[in-house]
Image (cartoon, rainbow, N blue to C red; front, side, top):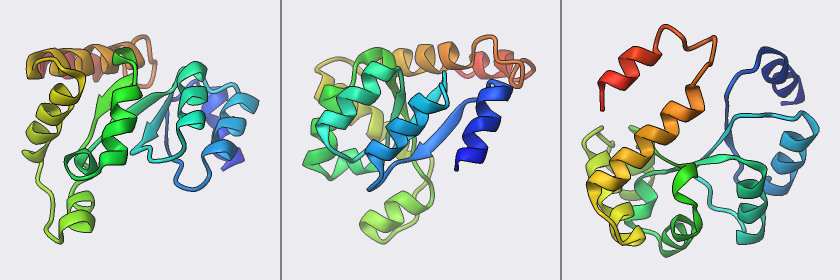
Length: 154
């Protein structure tokens, strides 16, 4: 992993990380390698490490488990609006949770549930996620050609 983090630092790339069971170690590595743009995929770890990752500047994806898990809902409540991203983890996430393959349309349910948790509207969450992702990729030399296409989706 350290090889990839060093390469990401040198190339100024976004990293997308699973932290399950290694939350503290991942935070230490992000700090050591001074990763400027990190996405924490489907965080389910301790709230104290969550706070440290937020303070570090990481973004967090919320996916289908928010539909079924009180602990993921509690984590979602703690996420600042400017660090929130969504994902489906298709097709595996829903298959793991409910035994059926996920489809992209489940993202609508994820956004609706996040809106309920955050006591806001679906449109607000959709706008926040779009703005957060746009900020994350802004000025990324690796995504320069993709940026206009991504903006067209919102």
